[in-house]
Image (tube, rainbow over all chains, first blue to last red; front, side):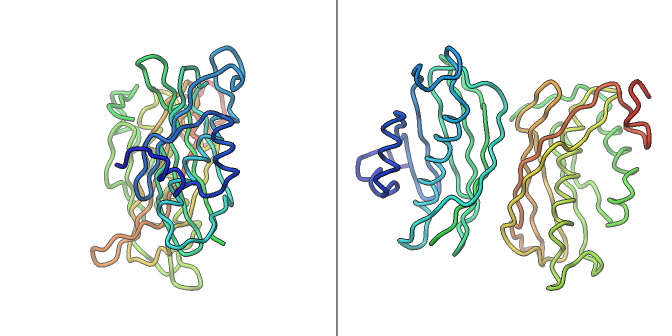
Length: 140
Length: 159
């Protein structure tokens, strides 16, 4: 697994808007390798739905960011990948100090890429899965 | 999820009994290959009536097999006197299911009071070679106090 660096971040999030959005939320790259990516986000009140609980939209957002980066790192060409479809299952309210999204490419095809993301919430020393996403991306 | 514990010590018999009473699974020739708390693997052989115009397993067939595997993976954790229903499923078709048999495995990833989340995968097998042909996520409901027997599922308190 590669440790996060500015260069890797540049490689897997080439679109300016994505990085801008990542920075806006406070999402950080933890690690990346071909077809896998881990992102992390610290809790702040502006991301909450209730005191100490991450908004479901934020769970979806960190999932999407990790999914795009994992897909990009497994992509065959330089073409742009666009999110075509996704399903997000929520298991429990995300109450904690950090969200962690781990994305893994299931299939990287010529046209379609299928990526799974498991999203966890860290609350002190306890880590529990709060959501899962299954996403299809299409290459241009 | 690791170390899943069934709420029914008799889960193996209960699940196999329920599976044996599913006419559709019998019709397509599906069998339980493996069963442990929260995990179920089903297999079935290719038959021409179950294929589509290219000769691959019909997509609905692949999805049905995985749905059944997911249902029984969830049901294996349920308490006595309960039954299972699929609430929601989403699948991705990854490759053509053009093998001579299918193997579907589903496992529970989250246990709630009434709602169980699962993921599952189907492999198409041909001469020992396996192709990952489907992945999916499922939401199953645990209907407590409802019988798993035919026609009684909708009657509250029926055993």
